[in-house]
Image 1 (cartoon, rainbow, N blue to C red):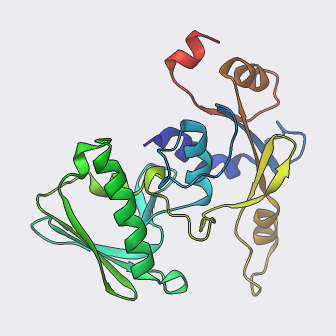
Image 2 (cartoon, rainbow, N blue to C red):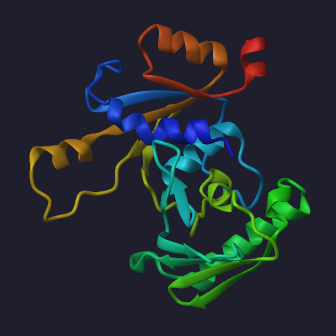
Length: 234
């Protein structure tokens, strides 16, 4: 599910202030690939460059943190039955719409199974909105890797064409997609909170050769995405 790109962007904001972009509030990230755009994974499997953006601005029930560990996403907590057949998720109150989210999950699961994209999903029997704030995923057989799959960009949920974080799209500058942190709470105080609110990631999709050259010249703080073939035929 393209986790390296996701983890790289999750940590990119920590690099602001390193000076590689010429602005201490910005960090430039090159993603190997082209045409960065936010596309619903329900319409087609995300390409690497799309997975990087999806992982940054959209999340599923859970997501991966900077250490590649599963953490809350749309669900603020979850429980797994002792037999591994029932996964119960309680949604964040501000985003609670269990039936709508369950419907989106069913669509994604059906597409992956119909296309035989991941046999690890064949144990999922049904996805049910138990209450307006609780979703239950019921399995026919245990799938220990299910949480990691749900945390990947392939299960990021776009609602009304928009993601729910952890970052937000702040527009485009030429070929750069600008990402920003969520708004700081009105009652937040201190210079640290204000500094974090000013941080931006400038995300650029480009060929491997250009991405590496940009990094070598100090014009990008990170290069992520791509495969061996991208570098072999650069």
